[in-house]
Structure formats: C-alpha cells, structure tokens
Length: 298
Image 1 (spheres, rainbow, N blue to C red):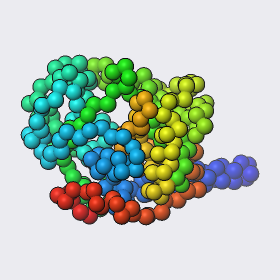
Image 2: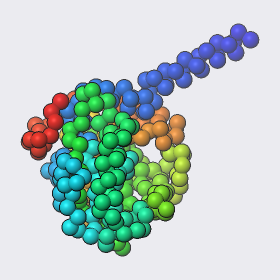
Image 3: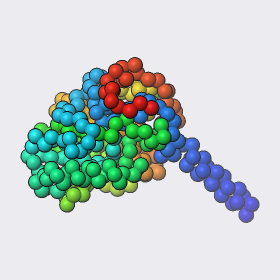
Image 4: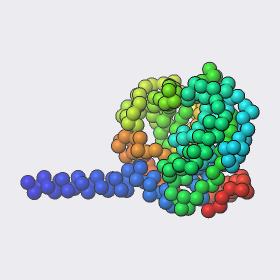
C-alpha cells in the first residue's frame, strides 16, 4: 500500500515537472513574457518578408502596406489581404479573379473594409503573434496586400512548417489537401524528420495522416535556408514556407505557435529539443535597418 502511494506521488511529481518545465506549450508561454526585440518585430508579416528576402528566401510581392482598412486600394483581381500583426488566418482574404476563396463569392470591397474594422475593434489577445511581451505593444497595426501564391496547377500550395532548434531542422509539418468549404478551411497534416521520413505517431490531435510522400523538389534548398536562418536567429523558431517548383517562399516566422493543437507526444519531443537547444538572445544588426520609421518602438 505504501509503495503504491509513493509511486503515485512520484508519478504526479514527474507530470508536474513535465508540464511546467519540459512540455513545449509551457515553454512557449514562459518565453512569451521575455522582452525580445527579434521575436517581437518578426511577428510582423511585412518585416518578416523583408528580413527573409535578405537571407535568400523568395517572398510574395507586396502591393500595398496601409495603416487603416479604408486606405486599401482594390485594383487587383488576385491577391491576399491581411493584417500584418494577427495570426491564425484571422481576417485573411484570399482573392482569385475577384472571388473570395473562402466563400466562393465575388468580393465586396465595402464588406471587407467593414469586417477588418470590426475585427480590429473586437480583437482578443489570442490573435496577436507577438503575444505578451512589451505589455502588448504591437509593432504596427496595419494591413498588407500581397501576391497570392499558387502552385503549378493554380491551387493553393502545400505549406511546410519547419521546427528549427539550435540551427537544425528537427521536424517538418506538411499541410496538404487544403480545402475551403462553406468558409471553413480543412487540411491533412503529416510530419517528417530531417531525412524526410514520416513520423508514425500522431503529432497533432486532428487530421493527422501518416503517409509516405515524395520528397519535394525544393526540399534540400528549404533545409539549407531554414537552418541558415535558425543559425542567425539563434532561437527556436517555426519557419513556415511554401515550396513552389524550385522556389522556397517564406510564409512567416512563428515563435509562439499553436501548440495546444499538438499531441502530448509531439509537445514532449519538441519541448525536449528546446531544452537541449536553449535560446540565445542575439540581435542581428541588419534587422532594425529594414523596419519602417513609422513602426512602434518598444
């Protein structure tokens, strides 16, 4: 009886230790309060693109960068409209031939402007990419209009979420079979190790599909770029990219990702990697050179 009690207590201690110090999501939360200009400014979608371009990534063309939704100029029939500071596809418009790909309906410019204004006035903290540092200060609460990236068949491309620790790619989460039906986006996901071997254990709670897939044409180039970027950042980062033909396009830098969507096994593996490769708060001198003068300063 006493042995069983001691084993139960030991088990609880291990669980508490895991949840507080090792588990990936717990580390994300604790790191989100540490003031870090690099992670803060690279949460901005415009700055992230300009920075990645300097280090060899392709990026979607920027057509407009404005402060307020009413300043948007709807002069392109195919583009993406989104806030530079929000995440989780919140307030993102994918427009192809003047059709909103989320609704399959013709775009209504007044409706887009009103909705973006509504989102801004009712936004909650969970949609901010910079999270909790600098007392919630945002680098820039503006809007970007950019090129809509499509694959060789004219479809939305698969995206590759690259988990980089200590300058090394550990896992790549490939999102494929992405569809938008009745304004709801669905997808399948399979994770790979650095050698492009699929991970059999489910890494996310929903839509995980273990499957062997051909290595993408630009995979080796992607590895070189994301590992070089990770070595420069000297921090853990999930670097999201699109592979289109021979090109590697930056999606975004994600320092505080949605780990609550991961399985316990996934968060354990990621958390261990982070512990083995702690962040070093180095700041690249080039970074401040590309930040527009009208952006906020922490």
